[in-house]
Image (tube, rainbow, N blue to C red; front, side, top):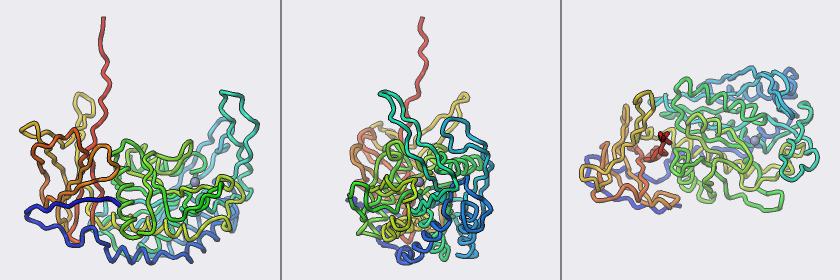
Length: 457
Ligand SMILES: [Zn+2]
């Protein structure tokens, strides 16, 4: 847990009394996540035999076609408020040795949208992937310095139960769609189960590309992949920690989301520890948050710190080899974080991008002020929420992983710390509403210096 000191200033608005305390609505949501429902979802997903995107499309009980129809129908049954759809693409065959898409195929993400009330444009996504794969054993040992040949893909109609990878993430998304759709939120919540993750993050990358092209305001993506394993192949056991991976740099918006999940996790599930892993993903592995990061969206991956590689992408990734209590805990962390974000104001804006001579120029709203020795912060909030209480500035040392200090500054959009060097601290700002719901922190991140061509004779 972080140690943050709040300093009170005499401002026109007061810091809400509920700030940093559990919100009863979020507590209720957390309590409603059901281990029993998650069990039923996992068993049903396993019953389709395989959910490989190249498996049978028309069999009513087996294969990816039956699985996606079932997920779609489940979303529809949870609440009439959920807008359920298939997000469909016709994939072109991918050429090459060991291609996982050896022929053209249809790919369907299954999407359920719970429209927000007063802040509809802002979206919070909870995701996982419902597709599965089984791989053969790697062929041969590579010569020194040679890249190993990728393991061959097996017949897509063979059993690929994928209960932990990623039935667990799918169950989290579905259970939260059920629970959260009985409540109202200011922002829009989007529940997505992606397909084609196993073939190269295809469904999520296409979704993110489309969202970018449509200028969607995706505020946060909580992607869940492999959240069902609490004992590693080597026997390490841990059912009280969940890893949250976030991309660099250290003050990327994705890292702020990871810090937010850690804070909220500690508030609502103190027995569970959210471990912020300050790297984009595991070594040599992929996840559906990456496609969003590549389009400039804030996205993290939640995952078990204890994976069992012997079960992954094999027929032993079964219900018997997953941990429902662990999935339930991680689902509760997701529910608390997503609900908190969806109730909170949108994050303030700390920079602006303009065009100068055909080049994009980023201007940070952080300066040394008139004196040239102050820390002068500004931020923007378009259409501030009616229930906005004010803003909190956070700061910390550049080597500290978590925010160390907080200052509530009220309903203003600029604040100056006299005689404080901006070079030696990291600053951020967040918005807080009258019920104490807090937005993500918007960090002040310095853009890397652009390389310039130097002309010489
Ligand atoms: Zn996966």
